[in-house]
Every structure is written in C-alpha cells, then in structure tokens.
Length: 462
Image 1 (cartoon, rainbow, N blue to C red):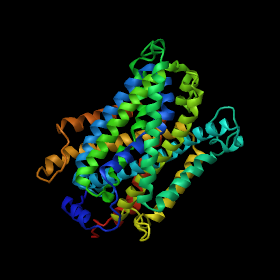
Image 2 (spheres, rainbow, N blue to C red; image 1 turned 135 degrees about the vertical axis):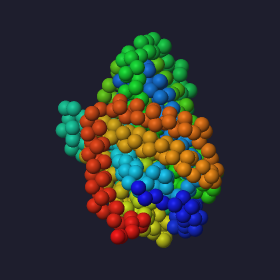
Image 3 (tube, helix red, strand yellow; image 1 turned 120 degrees about the horizontal axis):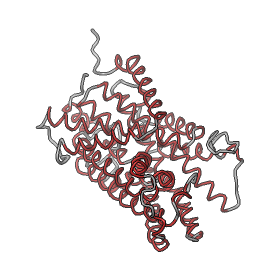
Image 4 (cartoon, helix red, strand yellow; image 1 turned 45 degrees about the vertical axis):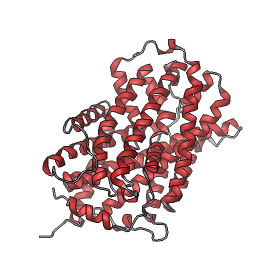
C-alpha cells in the first residue's frame, strides 16, 4: 500500500527534461478526437444497432454519461499531476502501489487491444476501398482465423501492416505525429459532418419503430458495446509531460474532445438507424457505407471509406502512444524493466518500447477477430475508470489543501456516479469476457509479486 509523494511527483514534473513539450490545448483536443472517432463510429455502430435497434441513440447517451463523469475526475488529476502515466500515476499517489499496478495492467489491456481492434476495423474499410478499384487480397490474408464464417481466413495482413506503419511514425517523434494527427482529424470530422448533412434527408422515421425492439436490456447491452467508441479521451492525459501548459490545457483537451465526439455519435447513430432497418446491420463491418448505399449515395460511400481509413489511423496512433507512455511511467518507478523508459536522445521518444509495443499490437491485430477484442478492451477500461473516480474522493479527503488548477464538481457525487455507471456497464458484458479479464488480472498479480514489488523504487529491503 506504499504511495508516492504528490509533492515529489510535482517536483519531478517541473525538473524532468526527458520528453519534449510540444502540445497545446488544441493539439490535445485533436488528440482526443483522433482517438475517439474511429472504429466506434465507423464499425461498432452497426454491432450496437443489432442489439439495441434504434435505441442505440440511448446507448450512446449512457456511454457518454459514464465517460463524462469519469472525464471530470481525470481532468482534476491531470491538471494537478502533469506526469506521464495517466490513471496509473494518479492511483500511485492516492490508493497505493498495488492498486496503481492493477490499473496500469488494466490500461495495458485497454491500449494494446484497442489499437489492435482498430487496426482490424481499418482493414475492413481498406479492403472495401480496394474492392471499389477491383483489387482483392488472397482470402487467407483478409482476416484472422474464424473471423468470417464460411471463409478460410488465417491472418489479417492489412491490419498488421497499418499497426507497424503507425509504430514507425510514433518512434520518430511526437512533433511529426502531432502534425499528421491534426490534419487527419480535420478530414475525418469533415467526412462525419458531411454524412450528417447529406444523410438526414434520407431518414425514414418508420425505421425508428419500434424504438426499443429489445427493451432496455438491449439499450444497456448496446451501451456496454459502444462504450468502446468513447475510449481515447483518457489517452490525452498520457501526454501530460509533453504539454506546454498542462494545468490549463489538459482539462480543456479532455472535456472538449469528449463533448464534440458525444454529440457527433448521437446524431450519426440516429441518422444511420433512420436510413437502414436495424436488422440489416447484422454482420456488417462498414455500417456507415451501408447506410449510404441504401440511400443510393454510392458516390459518397467512397469518401466515407477514405475518411474511415484516415480516421482509424489516428485512433491507432493515439492508443499506441498512450500504451508507450503508461509503460514508460511504470518502468521509471521500477515496476517494469528499464528498457521501457529509455528515451532516444535524437527523437525524444521511448524508441525501443514503441517498437516492442507496436509489434505486439500488429500481431494481435493479425490473429484475433474484432468482436473478441472489443469487449476485452471495454472491461479493462471500465475498471480503470471506476478506480480513478474512487481516487478523486480519497485524495480530496486525505489532502484537501493540495493545489488544484481544476476541480471536479460535486465531489463525492460526480465520482460516485462515474463508479456506478462504469460498474453497471461491466455487468452487461459477457461471462467469457469476465473470465478473460480475471485471468489477465491474475497474470498481472503474478508479475507484480514476482518482479515489480521488489524492484520498485519505493522498496526498502529489510
């Protein structure tokens, strides 16, 4: 239960010279939108519609509320402790080393599998775009084994390749990654807005009836699935050490990016289920394109495919980025080997860790189907969100006089709502997902007690 000193962490943040400070509030907002708008809106809207029907709109509202309450908790910590590591770092200062390790281990699950899942979604749209030009890949290289019923697929080659390309980009510097992310985010937001402007004229209200074909159980199950769509705002806090004015800019980046994306999600899901009867989304991995085809707007479907391809690239970029910064923070504390915190003097990035992580992400994307990845990502993230909300309550009570540049409103009520929403959504996930999650935690505890506990910088041998 040993804890890091908040004052010591603040002193480190002020003197650290490792990572380059290149990011502003605008960059962080773009980083957040870059992470949030991707597979969720371009792929999982179809999956959510099959379990919630037109009630998918409510599913997105519930997911947005859960993330909104958690985001306010994140913003308070991020403004107070501008250090790489996100939730892991905050928990280390409040709930102790073991809880911090569990959160860090959860975040590894989130970022690794989220990057892999989005790479798989990217592959589907990329192949759809190629097909428009009459180009098809060998069936064995189009998806993971068992991902497509009735097809002899073995390995998702496009998913593997895009993950490795993004890894190379991140390894060579945050400044270059930032510029590309900002440009691509503007393009994909423009595509989403254009879909809204054009698609709204093709909505048939009859497709919204019945509004809740599977009742509220379907809405809640849909919320547990599309929660994946909101992941990414927490990755903004991983950039804390690379922000020029973290106390001011990080809360803005977190809240602005989540608010913009939540609004877009609700509108897009309403239009999609208004154009296409919800049952037709079953088994579809490019639902936005399907809606345009049903509306006889095939000319625009190509633009959407391109927007999805570019959009999901930024999600992979931000999630992979977040993973490397979590590992960097844990390594600096001695809980992981030093290789994960080695900063390349030329590029100012954790170069070795980036390539190691990126390779693992690419291999998972190549061999594991999308539906398996999505639920595993969600449960790890929901657990981490619950713990960070608890940490806000603990620190407010234990150290009320700490300087805070941003205050989460209505403590303990807002953090308590974050915990309730997140735990409730966890209960909506499948039993198999829980089995995998518990197994992952047990492996993590084995690593902690076998290596991390005695190598921690806070360890004092007796």
